[in-house]
Length: 256
Figure 1 (cartoon, one colour):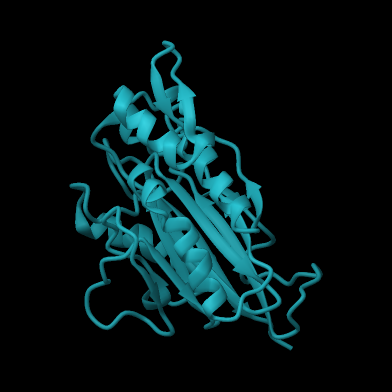
Figure 2 (tube, one colour):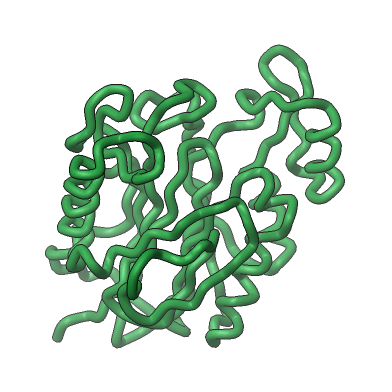
C-alpha cells in the first residue's frame, strides 16, 4: 500500500512524542504494489481522471481511507489543474472537489491527498499549531509559486514552524524539456536547472520546490525516489497511460 510512511498505522498506539497534546500528524506516500487496478493501471491507482474503471479507482480510495483510519468521505482529493489555487477545508467536500492544487486545514480527522505521477507531492505540517496541507507542484505550479502560496496559507491559519515532507517525483536527469522551458524554470528557481541523462536541457522540479521551501523558512524532509526509475511508482514520463499515486497528510486527534 505505502511507498513511504511516517509513524505506525492509524489504528496502532504510538509512544512517539508530539508537540501538540491534542493531536498528532501522520504522513504517507502510496505505492502501486497493492490495489484493484489492471494494466496499464495495475496496483493502487487513485486517479479518477486517467481512464481507469471508476469502480476500481473507488475501491482503491476506500482501501486507502481504511489504511489511514478515516471514513471514505473524509479522504479528500482535489481537482488538480496545475494552477495556484489554495483551498481551506474543514469538512468533507459538498459535491465535486474544487479546482485547486493545494488544500490546508486545522481540522482533525481529515486526510488531505495530492495525486501525482511525476509531479512533486508536498505535505506541509505544523504540529504546534495543528495545521496541515497537501500541495501538487508540477513544473507549471513551481514556476507560478504554488508552494510559497501554500506556506502563506498555512501561516494565515496560525502555523509558525512549518515543515515540509517532499515525496518522490521525476528526477532532473529524467525530465528532459525544450531549452526555453528549462531556462524559464531556472530563471524562477535556479536549483531547478538540470541536464538529462543525454546531456540535454532538463528541469529538476523537486530541487526547485525544495529551494522555494528553504527560501520561505520551511524545514524539509525529502523522500528519495525517482518516479521514472522506480517500478513501484506511477510515472507518466515512463509509461504515458498510467495511474496516480498519492501523498496523504492527516491531523489526527489523540485518544485518551
